[in-house]
Image 1 (tube, rainbow, N blue to C red):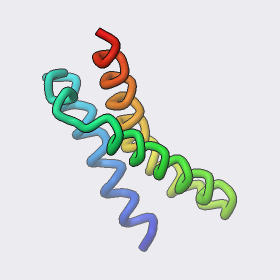
Image 2: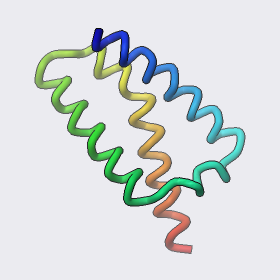
Image 3: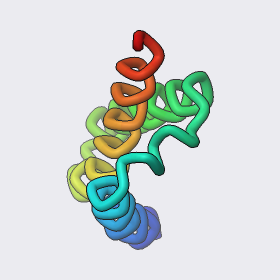
Length: 81
């Protein structure tokens, strides 16, 4: 069941990346602290998956994780301006 749930996260990650690619202004609506906490939380989940040998789940979580890293970087970059 974990892999099934992560499959949906996998698909949603690509859909979110596509939306952000089409309209980068959508990223400015996120809260920096909340996005950072989410990215850190997903980081811990990925470490757990690796420790347990859940390689499929690790792979399926990556697009969603990368999206949140992009959001955090975008928000940090815009905060400096």
